[in-house]
Image 1 (cartoon, rainbow, N blue to C red):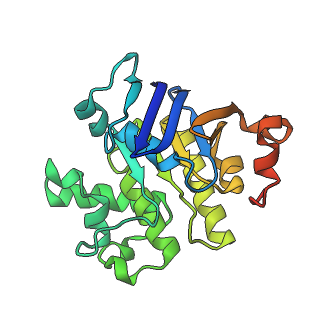
Image 2 (tube, one colour; image 1 turned 180 degrees about the vertical axis):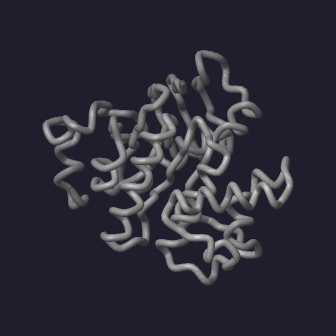
Length: 234
């Protein structure tokens, strides 16, 4: 569905992306890993149109990326959940839906999505400040899937969570991707998340993808040896 070819991006004299090539198919879950500062978030911002690449091409279903059509069909779980503080839980989940339907209908869909991520109706009228970190992440996930997107992006989905909550979020993400058939791109440095969520793993280093292969085979990949053994959790 998405093809990235020869993507370059620099900020001043700092070259961040230096010819990234990637392809992600419908229903596939790709995890992009790399040390901090290697350009993972910049790559994601280029795909979303938040940052303009210096060079290269991003296509969607074989055609130049139509931002309006693409943005209408994607969901995003932000690092830290990034909920709107002034809105209740259900209003956060239904943020996009309320632009085109009644609040009553949007709330019903929000309640359904909250139930999908393991939160009951009693949470719907709480404010984000009343949520634990794990609950906020689940609300963020419910918002990401509220409009039944064909593409979902996950930015460090388990950051700040304890191991038990992190495993629960990973399990939820994997089941949602499998059930919906959505294409998923996850930016992470957590190898437990990679193993739980991903079909494929791509390692971004020195501005390029130096490894791209099945998660099931990553323990035997020479290019990943230093990353797996460099203090990153297995």
